[in-house]
Image (cartoon, rainbow, N blue to C red; front, side, top):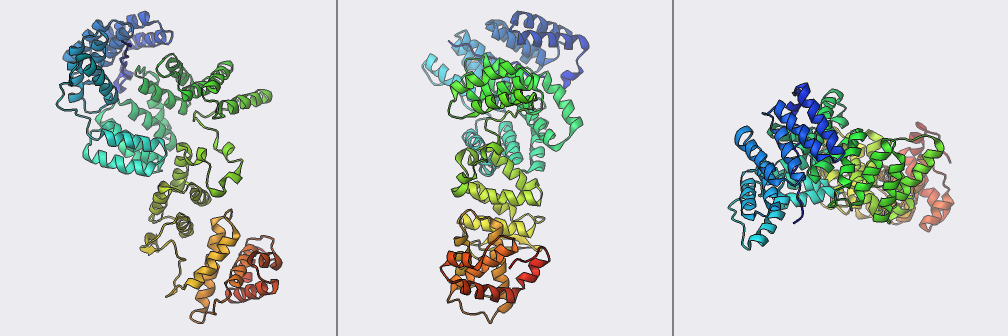
Length: 576
């Protein structure tokens, strides 16, 4: 049977107050682990237990080492003492015991320990692994597991779906699902952790912090919660609080793969590259996960950021074999060559994708939307949603226009929420409505403007006129269509605004719209001039299939009513 691993628990906050001698032996144990000297690590962890026998983490670490060494019976003896005499609330120890019993082929005892874990553990920290073990035990015992209830199982299917949505960058959908789960199961810490991440990715920072603090109030040593909090604090710039958390995370030694990977990536993001490299190096020695291409990239980045350049090259070359089509390894190997020539080695991000600016070097790809590597990248999507909430005016404008190129349900929901934020600029909301129109959103939607909520139909041009005729809309539609798909939303907005201003000033004495090409050409010409775009009447006339004199006549009429020339001259000279 394949050897299972028992996690050595991460250090709790109170470990920082250990006596110097206990801490000394702990550090010696960790150092021995890094060199794969389990015999010495066991010796030092035993010493740590002697100096502080009431600390459950020391016992759990010792049990983990014994399990790694194959002494499953001794490991379970330590775990039994821990549960009976030191901390009965550490229900995860039952899961560790089940692993040990299974490795000793004592399947009845393994089943009993596993059932106890599933019925008592409220967090569901190892639920996926427990269900996998349950399948194994059912096969070995040739009967169903004697299980009445799983305390943390409710909501797990929905939670798995939510995790998939997060990984796909569909944050709004994931958040809705996770909110429902948390409302029903307030003690479902994994769901609360992921909900905090969902809020964070959407730029809802206060909600993210509240949720993660709630997790840590229930379980102060929750490693996922601590790692998430560290990332949030770094984004918030809370240096003092983050430094305290760094000290705690530096001494955590997880043995469970998922926890080790989480801690490794977190330490990398925090700039703790030496710790990240140590953790990734240990993961690379694990046959169960060392075929994952992303692991080689993360390890290569950690090696690079700790000036282990030859190691980084070797890891990226290995990545090239595992994932030859991504182009990531080639990109970073070439970048290293350039850095070597320059004699400078700036830090590299841990994210498993080409840098955003590199992907945007071929804008011709965007005519019909972003390429999939941009559109479906969770990092890029979260950056957009974060900027929509927290960027300056120009950044928000750029993001709104970029979201049109992603064009999915997630974007639609984000923009609908944006329209209801009272403090957001009205011009930006107009841009958001234009994007929603391009997404095909119809029917009235609520928009907060002027201290009240107004229902707006994105498919129609907004105006204060008592009526809006189809032929008026046809002029705008024609102008926008002839401008082309590569035009920006600001230009479309300027066309609509100019046309509504013209009609409003003349209403009700609005001329007939028998020649919509002429009016559309006028809007095209005048907005181009207002934006200092070089254009002639001949050029615009050709675009609309009319004569230059016709284009000139209609443009003069609009300018006469709206004083376009005078308005434009306040900002820049009008060019005839």
